[in-house]
Image 1 (cartoon, helix red, strand yellow):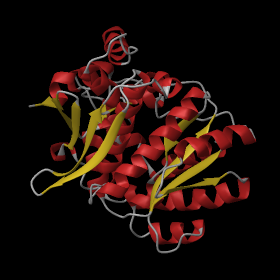
Image 2 (cartoon, rainbow, N blue to C red; image 1 turned 30 degrees about the vertical axis):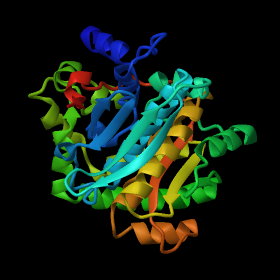
Image 3 (tube, rainbow, N blue to C red; image 1 turned 135 degrees about the vertical axis):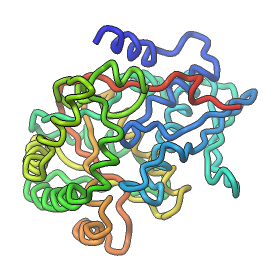
Length: 337
């Protein structure tokens, strides 16, 4: 892991004393993103950063309408906004639209007082922690801080913490997981983004490294064979049951707007939630199966008490030790003219 750890340490280093736009971009790339595809491009001009979708890195099976892609852009935008504010460069975000480029985020940096310093310090430490948690409930003040951090106009965050309700949610999660695992296209798309050892992850600079979710490393020739043998519906459903039952609760994010602009706002809200959780020593991970499968999504929304609306993210949270960190691509690979 030495070369891999060295690369992770470099990409997750604190901001320098006088950060430049590239430093803010580096912090933006530490945002969560589906399958660690990193579907973003950054265009730098003077005091402006455009965060553009990279459709060549989309996941059309699990995310056919690019919902997750735009949520990811929102997470990256919020990271950049927070890093800029913490450095005395308060910034404003505008959502832009273009027939060719689609929808993207434009961030214009100014100068002023520092803020969001604690959230900025949490950016390099934030991770999607895919393991069992310690099973303990959070204190009321911790839940309040998470809710306050996520509060953005147009985005609702629903908390599920009761054990009976979590067991009911598990039924939707396992139903969604089962439907996905029965779909060969979903399985093949997931396999395309798996990295079976640190050397492969380092070579690609992206993807899901098994070590980051507790799986042992394997040579590239052996990893796919082991995956095909071990990736079974019953085993995965048992894993998700253990993970959810060890969690303190779920947070479900819902936007009023069902379009890329609304999804960007969901990403911003979730990232603030995730960074406040990290600052409090609280872990999180996605359990999006019931909202990724069209057949399970309406019933899950009705169960949540929001019939007719589209839940955007399902996030479990709780206390746990950190896992190994995921990699990111070099800045020169994501900054475009």
